[in-house]
Image (tube, rainbow over all chains, first blue to last red):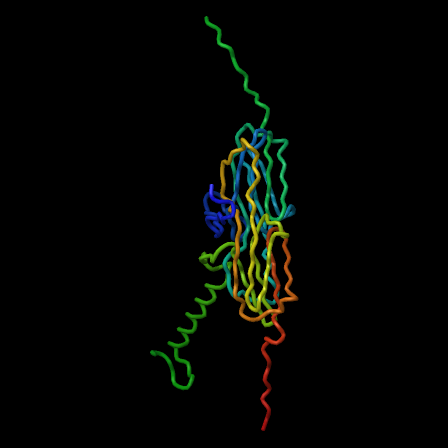
Amino acid sequence: MANENELNIQETEKQEIAETGAERTRSRLAFVPRTDIYETNEAIVLVTDMPGVDESTLDITLENDVLTLNGCVETAYPEGYGLAYGEYRVGDYERSFTLSSKVDRDKIEATVKDGVLRLHLPKAEPSMRKIAVAAG
Amino acid sequence: MLGRSFWGQTTPWSEMERLRREMNRLFSTYPATSGARVAGGYPAMNVWTNEDGVVVTAELPGIDPEKLDIAVVENTLTLSGERTPLELAEGDVYHRRERGYGKFTRSFQLPFNVEANNVEATYEKGVLHITLPRAEADKPRKIVVKAA
């Protein structure tokens, strides 16, 4: 790992969504939010950067193992000002993940703070049973 | 130059040339329509201006605003801060790591001097908004032409 004091940002540009499959109904730009995923002993944690999104504009759905994040960003351009120099664009966020069956669906928790979503996906109790094989 | 007319009269060529230039300018500055611009560093910034001041916006999700340092000297704005990496316990493993972290500093030259005492910054939903009013002494003055 790089030195912690060093800036470790590979790309500053937001990645636009490639139009595959279903088209979007909102005629807006949409980006793939950058996400960190890590696993602890008890859970899988998903941390996503969604600047401009808060709890009222974020939609999380889980359907058939597919977890979809949908963040709407209202573009609020400063009134009375004209853009002199632009480096980033503003748009919605959309991303889906396929969950493994070991996630306990009823206990998923989501919090959003300062434009960062944190999803806590607790692992389900192992339901695996070992079957003893007897010599026949 | 071809198409350049005598005494400011426009010709079809110069009109087309003007239109082309105007279109280029439009598409290269408007963020919602322009193609990807090469970012000058982290964070990416948008700069808005009018006669009375500048508004600088930057997307900085998950930053502690206390650790954000905004300094204005004459017409230079310097923004520095730090994005701290996630704190993982021992034994935790990353599956995916896309978010950046670390210290950053960016300096920006503003188109005019600003009133450093009246600079306001807000941080909301991970978006930083800095409003910098133009220095009174630096504002354009209208010159009235008197009749002789």
